[in-house]
Length: 251
Length: 312
Image (cartoon, rainbow over the protein chains, first blue to last red):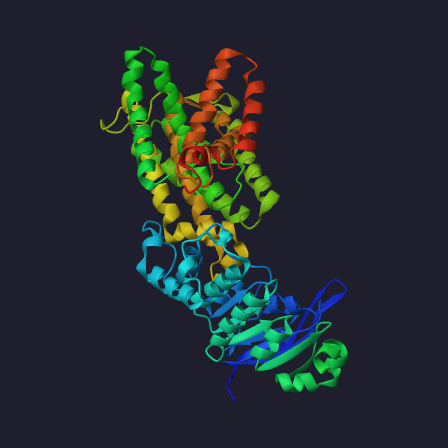
């Protein structure tokens, strides 16, 4: 068994009377693809925001590669190897696809308090960015303004910017949301090509995506993790079936 | 518009500006020399505001503060008999950079309407400070009897020499601005404006980049203030009036925020129209208002968008 990369212990977050994250503990192993599923309002986005550092938990700890990062901001976590995609596509729509990825490369190669040299001409930013665009199948679209890309392409671009930071941990918040069947298939293929190479945390509604990608699954209901296990174990778990999966998966 | 055509347009603009003094002299209309010089000084100020407003997305409603600080730095030194221009202008730049550092360090922690109000409030504080210091003329201001002296290099009393100095500084500011917004630093600044959450998740904290841009903009505007007080030969807290901040904002928006040259166009358009209308009727503001509304409604990318096309 691989060693633990991310250790979440007893994470708790409430918004007023709503307990959105209730004593959540998780261990993400190096190299695994770990899916977090749950019905709407289960607190999935609240959880991923706390992992990414965009939201401060009320209680609990997050350790990454042995270091306590609970108090670190999102940029500080990103510099330690976190990368994420957002539930609603988050890209620079007024930049080209290539410029989007170049910024991600720039964030992790040297400092950016450089005021004089044109950044777009830097080969050390350009060529890695091009390579990543090729990897996600956007090689031909590098000069297109991100706003003018198709929805599926924009989602792939977001994954590309995340990959370009050469992360140790990828947090993916519903990467196939709003996609057609063909786009979904392509995204699943892209994510499976990362499997094993990267540690992935995948929050997803789409059960095909989850069961074809995940090594392990955690089920979140009303802010609580009710089960964690392999897809087979989770499928067989009576409580999960009652609470969430319903007859659709049981059949 | 391709880069080559754009270079030609910019060169034509430069030739036009360079030709103003001889043409004004030929036509025996020195007033125009004065007018264009004043416009260019405001163009430099608007250009500096555009770095934070257009590229940084920080709606500063107090940029006139730095015009004032720059002007006071020159005026106060002159008041105590120090006329060395290098010293005066260096103090103008340093003092406005320092004021921008303090104002920026506090206001950049806020955003949206709070940012607008905080920058306005700081500038009002400086404005009332200027009014209250009787030693420097209070709200009447005071005359700048001796213009900045540059050891015989440039004589600001020579209208032509002063004009070309302002033009040179404007061109330099344009060039530096162009380099800046396309550098690594500039791209992070624009990225933080375009999508803050994405920028943070890539590993950039926007705050230090925004603060640095704020200080650079303040310093450049302070230099414009030093030019302005030499141009008017008069120091007054009116330089820091909030309507002045509004005018600078308007020059930027009218000229085009996504363009380095935009604010220069905006400064020319606003001040020329103002000049023409005020010569025609005393109620010129009644005409200017609707013109401004129309330009905002129909020129989404400003005059620069009109001139240079979408991809500037």
